[in-house]
Amino acid sequence: MLSSIWDDVKQQFSYGNMIIRLIIVNVAIFLVINLMKVFLHHGGAPDNWYDRILGWFKISSDPLEILMHPWSIFTHMFMHEGFWHLLWNMLFLYWFGRILGDLLGDKRILPIYVLGGLAGALAFFVSVNLLPYGSGGIHTALGASAGIMAIVVAAGMIAPEYSLRLLFLGDVKLKYIVVGVIILDLIGTAGDINTGGHFAHLGGALMGYIFITQLQSGRDLSEPLNNFFDKISNMFRGISEPSLRPRKGPKMVHRNEDKIKSRQQRGKTGHRSDRGKSADGSHQDKLDAILDKIKKEGYDSLSEAEKEFLFNASKK
Image 1: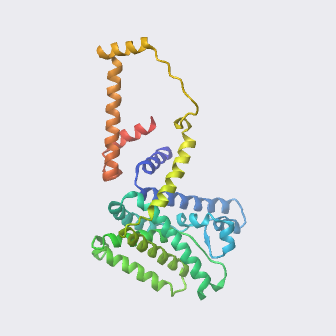
Image 2 (image 1 turned 90 degrees about the vertical axis):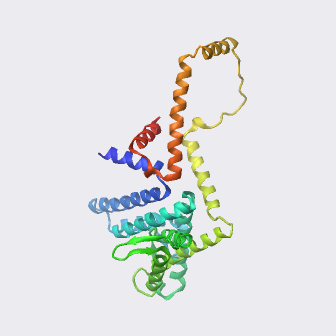
């Protein structure tokens, strides 16, 4: 059973869109965090071990902590401790991310998410260190909310008249949902609960606004990040698939005239190798057609037979 679940997760991560991949990453990290907590608790570890380990990956209001753990600038935006925190963030990511992905393209989702998370971290850091509420010591934050708020605002700006059906309310236009969420965060900054988190949300929302206004003026802020992600992806692909790297040095090619004549004769007589080549071409054509369908309509549009064909092809 577990191997079947693992195969399904790998398949969705490989062929799903960026929203599905982000959800898988956030859920996986949530499970790791909470399983670590269970093992530490039942293993008799000191009570502060869990908080210390988690503190390496949260964003902190202390500049020294950020300098000691610079990766926390990025890791905090993929982490959740509480189930309801994770659930609502993933639901918002799914609802608004699918809208934005359909309108702007899947490749812009991750850059908006990351830029929103960075803007949220900056807003959190500045607000804690400059406003009175942060005078009570060092504060930390984690969660995908700022990155998701960037996606929510971007979707609202691109398609303000798009309607979502809400429980008890019916169809509500996107522009009203976005404004309502922002107002709730503004009100939250005056409270005593998660004040820094609300400032982070607003920072992410501001980045969503900036991203769309820049895009409308002809500047795509996702391009530098996508170029960076592509370089990282190609680097790891080169490590995991060394056989695909070009060989260095000159290469001598020897022509065997007898073999060339033999191939020509087989071509004239319709040898079996031609039929094998034709079959390979048919397989590749079908695979290309399925990949084009995923690009245009998404993985969920595939039939069960197409999904099975794609899964089997990935094993070859």
